Image (tube, rainbow, N blue to C red; front, side, top):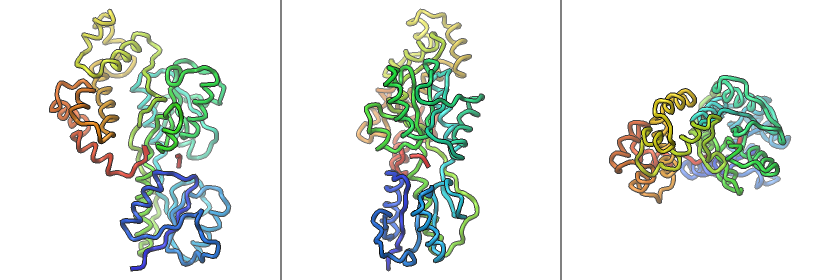
Length: 364
C-alpha cells in the first residue's frame, strides 16, 4: 500500500509535537515531508494532507491556500490564523491558566503577576483563566518592574519565562527564592536547557498533535471536516527549579511550609511541627488553614504526593525508594494512599505518564 504523503509545517518547531507526529506516522504508514525539506519542484497536489501550526508566515499561508485549492485536508494546531476555515486541535488555554493558579495557591503564595512579551487572543485566554481562578485581576508586568517579594509569576511560554529569569538575575533577585517563575508548554528542550530549569504547565502538545494526526487520517479517508474546535486539557504542572520554593507573606505559614518540605522523607504530623517550631498547636492550625485553605495535615499529604509524582516520572526509581523518599511508612501504605487520592496505583500512574505522548511536554 502506498504511504500517505503528509506535509508537516510547525512554527515554531516543537519537540513534543514532532515526536508525536513521527510516532503516528510510523504506526499508520505515513510518509512525512517536513517544511524545511520540501523540494522546490514538488506539486503540492500530490500530497494527501498537512498538519500545521499556522501563524503569520506568508509562505506557510500560501502553501495552505494551495493545498485547500486541491481539496486536500489540513489540520491546524493553533487558533492564531483565522483566515482559513480549518479543523483545529488546540490546547484549552483558559484551563492552562487555571492549573497555574491552583499550583501557586498550593505553594502558599500571596502575590501574583503575569509576564508576556506579546499579546493575542491566546494570551488573553491564559491570563483570564489565571486571574479568574485567583479571584482578582493580576498585574501584567514588564521586565525590570518592581515586584512584591516573595511573589510568583506566570509567563505565557517558556521563552518568556527564560527572559524573566534572566531579568531577575540581572537585578540580583533569586529565582525561586524571591520570584517563582512558571511557564506554559513543557517542552523539555526549552525547560531544561538553562542554568535554572523552568517549571511549566504541561500543555500536552504531544497529545494534541496525535489527536490532530488521527483527525487528519479520518479526513484523508473521506470523513467531513468537523465544525467544532477540539480542546485538549492540560496535564498539570511539572515542577522544576524555577518554582522549587514555598513562600507566604505570613512568616508562621512559611515556616510550616518549609518544615514540611525539608522533612518529607520521614513520618511526622501537625503536632510535631508545632512543637519543633515552638508554636501553639491551635494557633498554627487556625492560621495555616485560614491562609492556605486547607489543614496542615492536608498540606503534608499534598507535598508527599507531589514529590511522589515527580519521582515516578523517572522509571529507574523503584517504588519502594519513592515510598521511603516521600515519608510513607511502607510501600503498601504508599500504594493505598496514592490510589485513594489519584484513582491509580503508583505503577499504573507511571505507566500512564509514559504511554501518553511527551510534552512535560512551546506555546500554541
